[in-house]
Length: 312
Image 1 (tube, rainbow, N blue to C red):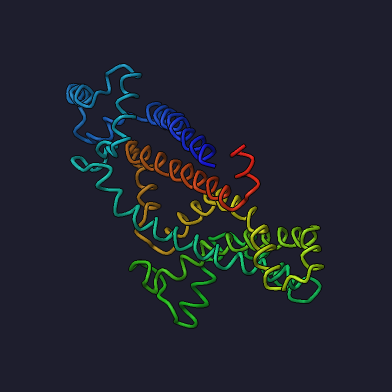
Image 2: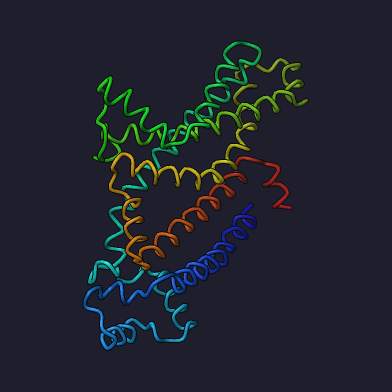
């Protein structure tokens, strides 16, 4: 198991190196002149050339790339083109914290509601409860967040007045409820449907029949044998669903007026602020890589078969 975990961890630097190369190429060959963006109306050839020398933009590409990698490792993503004198880290940090909190709440909602819902639906197979839950999760999955968000706002904010319409006051503020639910609903649907299918598959296995024949109590069968084995595919999907939920979270930020990275990223794209665009791309992809690494290692702990095969 330790060897498997180390092997997966050692892959991360290689993957990140490839990602930094792609991000660097896209940033370097993007449309427009970054120096022109920085200078704006004060642009002159002499001043532009002076800034290129100062920023190292006239250096060989390979040297620029190595400098970019070494700076990125220390969290130094350079200075913003649009906001001279301010570092990318300084501008991004507060917005990343807000987006991370929203994303974390959404993951928790998806997991803690999706798993029990799918498990309960499987246990109620053959009753009206099962198709009702299946239909509900299908609707939740099919509705995009830009339709779900206005619907929730109309019902719970405007009609019932239970929560504020927009804004952000932290993870324990009422204003975080609707955005987190909006992002989490598709995740609940995916996890619930997969958990249901996985539970039904495990219930049909021979070892469950054998446990019932031996007189093992229903609680132990359902939670110790069925639940533990049924949750394994869900763990895998959690890692794969991070990217979709991340995209949904960015759209939700725009709809609810949350001061996260979404609006900031759009402004950076339209103003061609490449250091910010490159930093966001690198941080986003790195987060997905780390999330999938955690899921892979967690899978080993949950599935003894993988642990045994890797130990051998």
